[in-house]
Length: 141
Image (cartoon, helix red, strand yellow):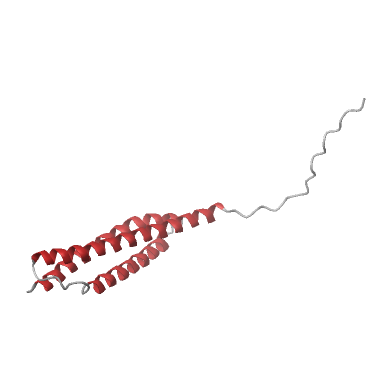
C-alpha cells in the first residue's frame, strides 16, 4: 500500500468513528429534549429524534465522502500522512461541531416554542357586564 491509501484508510476510520459517536450522543441527549417538547409523547419524540439523527448522518457522511480526495497531493511520506490527516480530520471535527451546535439550537427552539405555546391560553370571555367604580364624591360644606 502506498501512503495515499494509508491516509484514506485512516481518515475514513477516524471520520466514520467520530461521526457515529457524535450521532449516538446527539440521539441519546436529544431524546430528552424532544420528550419535553412533545409533552411525553414517546412515539412522536422518538420518530423526530430518529429523523434528526438520519439527517445528521447523511450530511456528515456525505461531507466525509466528498472530503476524501481534497488536498492529498503532499502525501508522499509519513509527515505528509500526518499533515493530510490533521487537515482532513480537523475539518471533519469542525463540521461535526457545527452540526452538533445546529442540532442543539434546533432542539432548543423546538423546546422554547412548545413552552410558549403551552403557556399561551386564550382569553376567557366575560361572564357578565361590569360597571367601573364611581369616583368618590367630595363632601360639600
